[in-house]
Image (cartoon, rainbow, N blue to C red):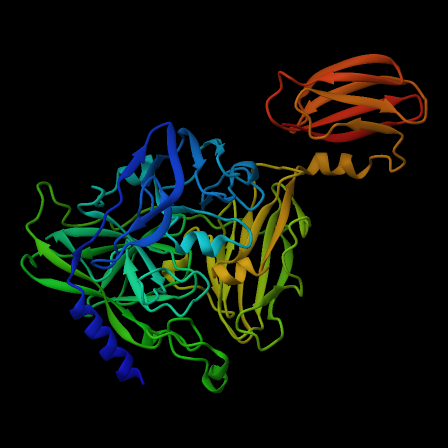
Amino acid sequence: MKSFYFIGIFISFKIYAQSPLFIPDTLSGSEINLSIKEGSHSFYTSYNTSIIGYNGNLLGPTIILHKGQTVQMNVANELNDTTTTHWHGLHVSPQNDGSPHNLIMANTTWSPKFEVMDKAATYWYHPHLHGKTMKQVIQGAAGMIIVRDDEESKLNLPRTYGVDDIPLIMQWRTFDTNKQIVLDDEADNVAMVNGTINGVLEVPAQMVRFRLLNGSSHRFFNFAFSDNRNFQIIANDESLLNKPVSVKQLIVSPGERFEIIVDFKEQQGQSFFINQLGMSLPNGYPGGPPLGMMGMNMTMGPLDNTDFSLLKIDVKAPTPNAIKEISSSLTTNEPINESGATTRNFQLRGLPMMSMTNFTINNEQYDHEKINFKVKQDDVMIWNITNQSMMPHPWHIHGNYFYIKSINGQAPPAYMKGRKDVVTIPPMNGSAQIVMKYEDFADSEMPYMYHCHILSHEDRGMMGSFLVTDANLTDVLNNITKDITIKVYPNPSQNNWQIESTSGEPILFYQLCNIDGKLIEEHSIKNTSFLINNTNLSSGNYFITVSTKQNSQIFKVIKQ
């Protein structure tokens, strides 16, 4: 059977001539304008495939940001459907994160504004609408984000975009006989790079940097070069590594990113291939061999458990001022001090136990109206994740990075010791332990998400949410009187909040504070009702403290 699939792949590559690899355009500056809309693209000669994308018909522009800058992202939704746009890996507030709670309705524009706080690395953006993430992403709605910083700019590294610093967005797709993308099928009969099937890329004969992103809905990639060469991993999800790590193969899970350096010096005129080594993936990993005797429950795609070429590379003349050697020391990743850390346990299971399509976290599936737990800002957290299902799950957490402490009880390999936001939990009682600390963006209303980044698993409920709360504010809110005798409405409000005593007891005093507890206004009142005008306030969360002779009550309110 393996031979049959391999022959089919070989024939497919012969039928369709090689195409130059598509390199997305770039956007930069203090204001980034994106529009997500329907379009079409010719993946195959004489066929137009319906897709959706950002700012065009194929993938989205690569957004280039600099640490410390302030940027406003204007995302116009031109679909006939609701969407969101999640800045995968960026350290932003939950209000700006683009999670399932940050909806962009049809024919509206979402404009989050934030400071770029992240280290130099490769990030990405994509829709994150609950129940429709897979549908919108596999149709093409995704793009890369490159963050640069002063530390990285001083290193001897390739960084000329599209020349010696090249984005490679790897994706699997299922096409039907009319070359349309099948939205509810993960058989995946095609693998592509930057939306190009059977692509070819020209690179200079020097050190070349590839930014690898697995933007697939489901399958894993196992990258290697056709000449079995060593290459250097210099960065993972959210940071440079302390120093380059030399490998011959690299497994990349859905949502995960790595930056690698490949030495093409003295190889002008030669050609190589980046290959998928599916036969060398661990058993049970989508794209690889089935899980032993239980593999009968695993749906095999036509490219699973095969080795084939993803991208041809033709080496041309070097560029002026070519990078010929890279820095041997890159950065210093400092471990998080675990003193006083709190722990939390997560168990991943099939529903039912043998399921390969439906999964739970701690025996629950996602409820959009439910917050699964709260954590205090500045608390160090250790999460223990155990996978009792028959599939691996790439575990992603929003809004912050983590460090991997262990996988299956063992220290992670050197190329996973940087800042991460995706870690694969192996199947059949596999485990991972991660450590993190949320130092910013406490919000008692808007949560961050955690979920499996296999998009069908996420859409079917393998996801949860949590709040990061200010420690002092949490203590205050826990002491709020339960016997509510005051009404505050409407909430949310665009113009005024009406404050009303339901007991007839006069209100003597009120304070209005922002989400950080900073006083905005306070007044003495001797009435059973009054209005607070909020017309001049910025949209967001606020707190109103209302005092009567008997007690004080705190209300969380929202200005739209």
